[in-house]
Length: 330
Ligand code: GLV
Image 1 (tube, rainbow, N blue to C red):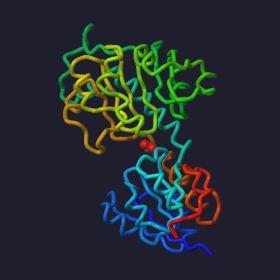
Image 2 (cartoon, protein in one colour):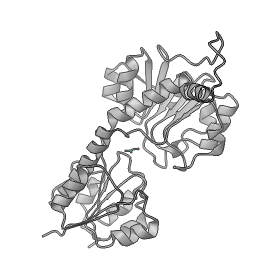
Image 3 (cartoon, protein in one colour):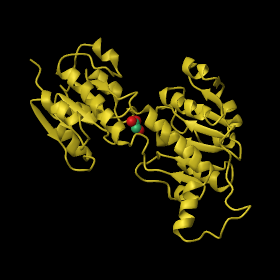
Image 4 (cartoon, rainbow, N blue to C red):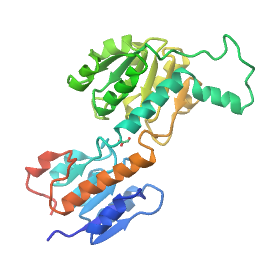
């Protein structure tokens, strides 16, 4: 009989907590709205069978070693760069994520950033709040066009495809770049191109890649210089995909026209030089932040976790190779 001790690392919306409580023998739920410090996390994972965690929890090798015997780490996020997956696999721990349920909300926010950055929405709001509107003028606060322009999607996954569907409503030409062709994007009339061609041809470059060693600082001084001076960079993926100080320099010197960001290199901090740039629209990692989406993510994470507690294969297993290896953590 499997034992069922679960740690939920931070307060999450229903229905996840109820689903977990129905099956677990013991639930240790951190009810404080803060990320557990590394030492606290290591102490609280000792002896648990399952962990439900968030993208702000660093589930590194030390945490996984402290959790030896744990069966599953269920991340309530689609990205799982916060988890040392190779170590989890070595220890026989399943890792799961929540793909699919946040696609539409994140694509909506990508369009929000794209439109808001081009049309200087945050800047305009700042002007109004400061009572600094000098009155309508033919040359006043002009921005970039969206309708009919070229959108370059870096990474051909679900969220990029959902963005492409929206962009078609704005009659945009869609280019994409990825490690493989996407039949879904091809079916929408998007064209697969090389990364540098995409940077040079796009009016909007939107990032939709996971954070890996290969994508860290994919956008840097050299690649920014390949973009048009009238182009905008949009990032709803992970902050470290962009070299933030190179981006700030590019925005200040007119290498590109603007940037719309939802994620940051050293979250929750932001490079002060970037915050000082007027031509940015900066959001605090809100991609999936709608009531219904967060509930769906909670449900998906709990479904993965409870499947493992019942001895079943979880629906969203990111390290299936763990099933082939004998468990080393017990
Ligand atoms: C959000 O950033 C997620 O990965 O779910």
